Amino acid sequence: MKGGGAYISIGSSTSSINSMGSGSGSGSGSKMTLGKSVKMYLTIFIATTCIYMVLYQYHMSREPFAPSEVGKPPLYIITPTYRRPEQLAELTRLGYTLKHVANLLWLVIEDANKTNPLVAHTLDRIGVPYEYMVAPMPEKYKQTKKAKPRGVSNRNRGLEYLRQHATEGVLYFADDDNTYDISIFEQMRYISKVGMWPVGLVTKTGVSSPIIRNGKLDGYYDGWIGGRKYPVDMAGFAVNIKFLRQRPHAQMPFKPGYEEDGFLRSLAPLDNDEIDLLADECRDILTWHTQTKKNPPAQALNKTRYSNTNLVHIDKLLVRP
Ligand code: UGA
Ligand code: MN
Image: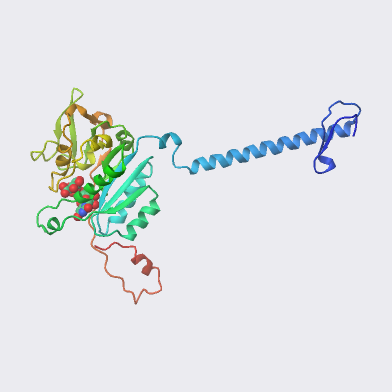
């Protein structure tokens, strides 16, 4: 000990600190040791801080959504789907769109008697929170030669799920084959009762849209009106869950061409001025009624010729009707 000060030795004699700082003749060697040690601890401190900052940034970049995003009103997206060669491609495209949207539950409901492990696997891989359920079309509609009420039992199953499990937020029917700009999802979260907006690629008019005159809803523009009160496309409206729950009998009719109209009518009472007009007061197109070219079912794989090849694995991934 020198000069009566406390002497702290850490590890070896070279990394010792004279904490006295009295300068009572401890010599220049000791001052050098002090300087070096301070430098060393400073370096360790700065390096550790940098490592923590990098790790924190990495952690944040791995988190899909910021905490403020997650606190937004929830979205419930009901997607009817059915077994066909295009099914996994459609679900993959829609799923990765939905992956950009926070606080969302995707209700994928298949027109089938049992779930398909290939669909479940696809949904798992996409990583959007989902429920996968089945709701077959009633037999009498399946057999008909006329137009079928496509996706209706699926959507009604979704409504039943929401009545049991959802208390707030917004419901939207997103067919598996349509195209959605994600900004529509952020807008629909805040719908108070019902919201509507234009849908591109519908009938010969090229678009289906509410008509806004002097800032007010003043009818509908659609290639086919057919006596409907609400001649809108399935992709063009969303409904607040609390509002839906106040209408316990609201559901979709098995009436081809009148599914949207029937469902919206079942939400009565609903005044026109209670309908929120989204997508820049219906001056923008953020959803499209796209259709995928139908593909014939894949032919059977020649298992003798291609045994012990990758084709045996790929063959199991094809959805055959
Ligand atoms: C249009 C509307 O957008 C549908 O909402 C409506 O149900 C349908 O017309 C109709 O009026 O019947 P469209 O593009 O012509 O839809 O029909 P699809 O895309 O073939 O089917 C609509 C949804 O129902 C899709 O999500 C599809 O996966 C599903 N679907 C279709 C079934 O669940 N089962 C089927 O047999 C066919
Ligand atoms: Mn479609």
